[in-house]
Amino acid sequence: MSRATWIATNLAVAVAATAVGCMLVVRLAPERPGTGADRPSPAGAYAATAGHGGSAARAATSALGADAVPPDAGLRTAPVTGRIEVTAPQGGVDFKPNGSFAVAWKNTTGEQVDVWLRTDTGHGRSQRLGLVATHAGARPAGEVIVTLPRVPPGPRYFLEVATAGDAEVRALSRTFAVTG
Image (tube, rainbow, N blue to C red; front, top):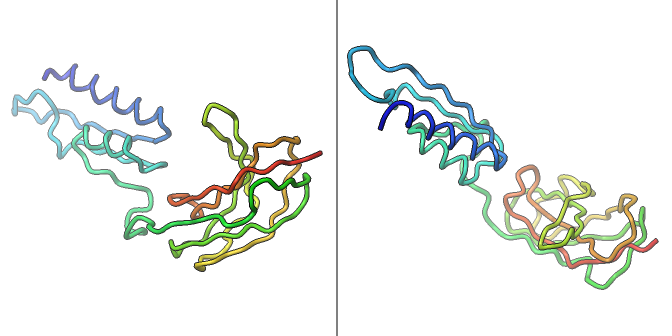
């Protein structure tokens, strides 16, 4: 593979990784004089990723022939495992803006959870509207009283309970309405 093709391929991988929410930093070392190699030595390449450690980041660094160096290297020993199940509120209930109600869940991750208000935006998509409870506990069963922010009335709101910070494990409540 020519040097120009190799550089173009690596640039395309970096752009693709950036487009899906990753930050990719690439430093390519020049060829070693006298080796006659078409591409830099893998030992001279360095790649680091930050942000979502998903498959795009892993694919980008693998394609560059370098190991990924996550920003929290050495801090996390294993991915979060377990399951979260939202048990309250039940579906079909109406709430008022700035009203408070209980949110309950079962959590086998051993991690603290955050509770987010979300809305269905259509076509299978949703949007986070705001964090309504942060670091709400790591016990196997949890409950917190949340207060809804001021949002427009509508029938397609729901809550996301997710592991705090990284949201590696998450669960969604049933939809509920916010009435004027």
